[in-house]
Image (cartoon, rainbow over all chains, first blue to last red; front, top):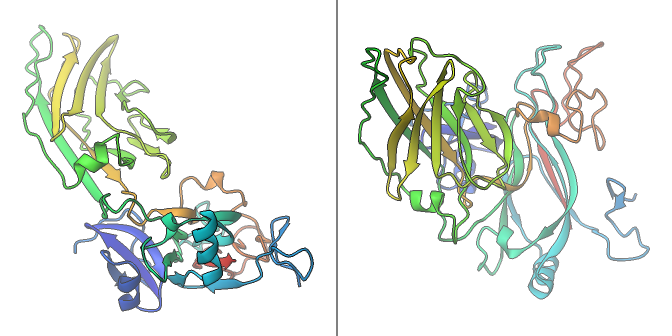
Length: 48
Length: 334
């Protein structure tokens, strides 16, 4: 699954992870959203 | 079969000893539990040498022959692992976060900074405006006296115990409404101390100054400069310890500005953030020319990683890690 990691409204990386929950466990403090559609690039704004 | 990292043999192959005989592969992000033999070596010697094969995610684009359709960076090297790389240096069973980038994302192992350093990524945005009442006697500027503080800014700007980590300055809201503004290389300057400028595109068009992640700038002031003929109007934002203050100098009757607004944003990545100690950049990274691998290689590297078959003929989609449209890869040898 492709995940967009978000910090303070900005996409900081796009990572592979087994699930959104797993991504949030691996990267505590970041918001993880599924992004298999590749809607977000690093640096994009995201309204949390 | 012997395992090589570049020209160096990682595994002992039964002869000579001292090789890196074990390996762990990550095809998605996860946590590497540092094996006892590595942990013990670090405890006794201060570091342990591991091998890293890391591949950044390929470009998101898979459009044939599109210039932005690039493969991810391939990084192969020995790395001296220390307790600083542990997620928790005091943990009895230390772990290290492994980042596997998706398409358009970077891959790496996460650097862990000082426990007192900020643990988040912040943006700082400052803006201001001025109006020119020029009547032939020179420009008059009214600057708002606002100051703005941000969380952890002391850490960000302190050139002391904690390494500040300003990695990029973006100029925002820099309007072109200064009527007779002359764009050019002197139209905008940003002054800093410390840090190695990775790319400097701080002309009017791009408004973007970047530094190496591992060698950030100690940002103390930013200067915006407009040029009109031989005269300069300079507006400087200076950090005073609690916020930014603004001042201006220069300018003469040649400036016939109407109203302009300007501002800047500072991106900084604190040492405890997601910045990776060792990183393999995505194919979308603007510094792709720094990759040691050719991101347009049709053969790929190290067994076919980052194979780019979007250029030339025949065209087909490669599913190799790091190829355009594909995620990255991490292999640790220890």
